[in-house]
Image 1 (cartoon, rainbow, N blue to C red):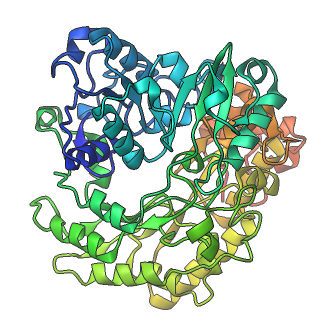
Image 2: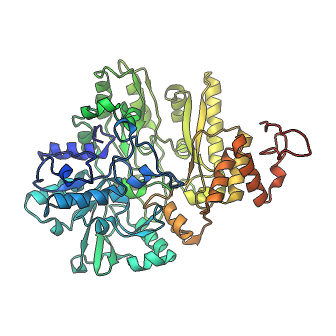
Image 3: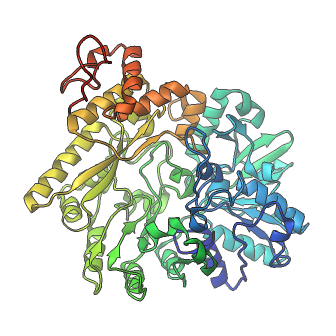
Length: 580
């Protein structure tokens, strides 16, 4: 659906192009079975721009168990079925049918993460670059403003789409590589399709070429065609970000959606503020490394305050700013001085396995910004709901940011993402050891106690991530029992296109080290791991007992605090509910 809000990529790129004096027409959620739906605005002067929206369409449509979701929060009234599976491919085909000869350029998260060969969980195989499968003319990957600015200008000058080959942040195809001297050759598709080691090697090389300061052009061969990925575009600087987020967004869904109840996905972010882009966290399961990049850029205080002041003009604003953040809320500056001029280090992470010695943790700018927002007339509360990287927070020696967070910006519950307790799993995830989370939880509790507040941590966990077998899942269950956590948010690992974790899932190889890693793929084991996290639920008792028996941990079956589940009904007496 078309939502004119800066959290929605189609709106951002459209407003950006409009500001450059291009005319932009939006055909939202067209009927892909009717070519006339793609002709409602007439023949485009320059190109069709195709996006599937804020989520990959397959991620949006299916659960981790491959069951089709009934609702689509990005559609009017949450109605499902208004978009096709593999939406970018389908939309591109119909657009080309509607007006032959009009260039088609794909962008957004689906096209971005499928720009080269990728493992597709729903078909269980390696798929080709979406550029070839969709027969599009160009893919814009990552954050698309500056690449689209350059591409649109070239099209306006009369350049054919097939001749646009030098724009950073784009992917194109050719049969002749002589025009791309020095490009890095990835293993050909014929190799990655059949050989797990080749796919892991391809992923390893891509990881080394994701920074605009150091990346080279990559190429992948497909039966005579070469798909070329140009180096990433440089991130927008502060002035450019201020311009983008200062564009005249209405912050609403299109009025035609109102009778259906509007767009559910808008409500959570309507009064939220995007303050930064980029993330140097480096989580293996996260797509941001391949989409927004590792270099953090942030908006000015003046730009953010102006946006916040604008909320008061909305009659539905109740004084609560739901979030001020980005991919990670407490990243507002580069990780170190080097990143400002040389980019992020290839082959190294800023926070994993331990914080880099060159890391310069600094929350002063963020704290000052939040203080200014709290003081604005009409603002009752400013919450931080996007991710907090607690290991980075603990690197800040004075502890002031955590105290500020607890005192002013938590709504009774703070969501954090330790993800697991097992060292093997956390290493695969690129996350800090569980001891860091324990220290954070200890400090959080102490500050709450000292300030007389009753606030709680709501931890997120992922089950069946590569590296996790039944032994690791049992360790997680024991960790939850020890600390009294009853997790509300538990996600079974979903292999999404383009991530390091998805490469591990498909190949059983960690592409960062090229070492083997255990992967739970059988449906029953994945169900057992999920049941172990909710071991306290009676409906899970049978599955948990089965998992414990299979793992040789029947010592955890019994009555009392040291056990996970009670025994089955039997000679020892009546069935009793497990007590914490």
